[in-house]
Image 1 (cartoon, rainbow, N blue to C red):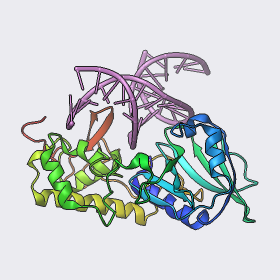
Image 2: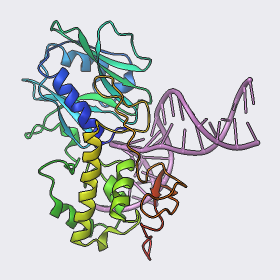
Image 3: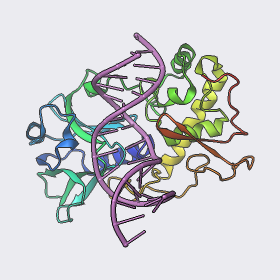
Length: 286
DNA sequence: AGATCGCCCTGCTTGC
DNA sequence: TGCAAGCAGGGCGATC
């Protein structure tokens, strides 16, 4: 379940191992992996061939590889279980290998997109003038982006008639926060996930943003976290680190602050974990 | 027009 | 032991 920190770890791996290499050929082994490339798998492979890859970028959970001198980028989303692996050409194909990219140089490695559940995928898109693939222009800056505007985020929260966890997961308001880090940041900030955003004070918003950044930076420092052995970083090493989380996945276990058993609630086809004592439900729930 | 819901997908876990 | 249901969940399109 890669969220922003895991994707950033992958981006760094790509920068180290794939940037500035020229594509010899690309091979699509599963159509669904390139479903967002509307012109189809053959077109996708044709357009990569012969082009040099620039420095990989990321926004939220999306990352992209610019193709130099084309005005286009290869956009990647890892979905639930996607991996971008740099493997020796001799390495056995992974069971869920979806796309393979070979290079023209003599380094004996290739790039592989492996994805069991196929929620992720690769596609090729024109860049906007600021170098962003056009199809993700609606994705907000993420909280680790130096240009993320805390003040604008606060005002957006005040304007919305929604609740805080929905807002945290709304990629058009703030990107890169998934279910796990949302629960973690809310636990740290002692905010209940159903608290209406309209009543947020500026200090409360800034406190929450601080915790979002803290929990993401902690994960980033540790090399990414995941609760699913499916996640591995670009070099194929497990990104899992055993830092125990404070809220997510801890149903029935004592809150690390107050000892009250952590609760799980079904919420929008997923789960929310919270401490019923530290994170009081708002009086009026929406 | 903004909010909400269902669907996509596979493998592991749980329950009968 | 075997099968089915449940669960994980990001993002997008349809719907209200």
